[in-house]
Length: 138
Image (cartoon, rainbow, N blue to C red):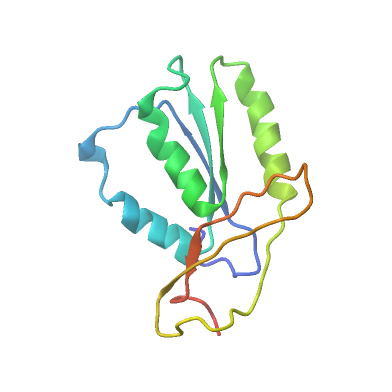
């Protein structure tokens, strides 16, 4: 549904899960999903709900958020959901999108890694580790 939105439009997925999922429900592997998220410039914000706060079952939620430049939140109690929804939307609203023209990169490569560094202390940077050039409108 987000694929048809222009590249100049903000695209996020709010993923809320208890971390329980069986292999029979997964039709695409992790790398394929991340590739499509990056190709279509979609950020994932994950909300992990349930009593297993730091349980391994939330690893995939964290990985999708990290890979796409989003973030992960944890809700132990039902009442925390409303507060977290506000925090997620506020964070998404205050993010910046940086555009640049890479110099000296392999133009034949489909995937390019990036590194974002800041010199000012006290700021939090959340960034994707790279991007795909295929699918970009020239």
